[in-house]
Length: 429
Image (cartoon, rainbow, N blue to C red; front, side, top):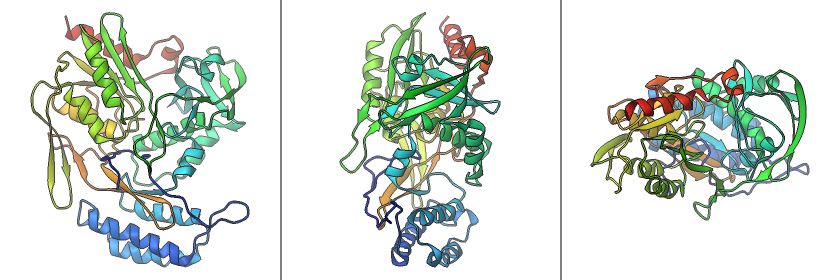
């Protein structure tokens, strides 16, 4: 079991033991695949928060997928089959995976190297939202608003098509966009020193090519001995007009401690902007610790509905608290704990949410190792706001919807951030 109540697609725990062919392909025996299937099915059968499984015949699903095991030999085919089975539940936070495969493919939370490049899909193009100072993308001359057309000689359009062809059928439009964009963004993370060739268009649509190498990241954190290292970026600064700006890339320790220290040091603020756009989630406890720094009194923050009980999460203020206006920036790239945090802060009236509606991929979940050494993530509860809104599939609806467009980014204007600044100025007058 995880030591944290997790709520994102990629908090991973696994041990790695599998037979492999000469070319490195893992094999799986029929006995092993049966043992793994039984572990997965029985866990869902016992723990899933809805004893009716949303109307799905879970026993019939077991029989149907059990009959397909004998034809499998490759471990990757077994994992693919198990994910197909879990997708029939129509919910997020069900997955079978191998941590090292995810990390090797590129992961904003797991990869030790980065190009320092953040993109969004706008009008079917991979448009740069921001570049991180001191990283290869910035040194290579890339800027906000530029369009990435090819990655390692593969057209971005092809990457979009490939990612879209393998999407779980239950995803809504926002979830599909989230998953496809993440598949492209993952190409900008990987082992330190890995070379990535980019073809891009500048502000005048002139085409360029540049080859960049992944740079070592800071923000490395170890959650537990049986977890891989995670990398979380954290920024806190004072914007003109005495507006606090805090951004972090995951709800993972020590972000809660960093947030507390930042709030205590950023005194005399007119307002606070929490920019968690693109944040995939993390630990629910980290979100609760952040929220506790922003409430004045004991507050019902959220509700978890388990199979056998309902749990209310009540915040106790962490003094000294910050009592001024709070704006949270979100978009379709948010997920899980970041969605729950935003929705609950909005529900208790403690923050105004600006940006784009999130997809509604919300836990909490836990992870257990399977007999073949892979990991199985499974949902353990349904997440609700204190007002009773179910977040799975619903997401967070901004109080002020604001989208992004390439022309504004090329002009150096982040429309979502600028709207947040304008709101704080008006709220504090």
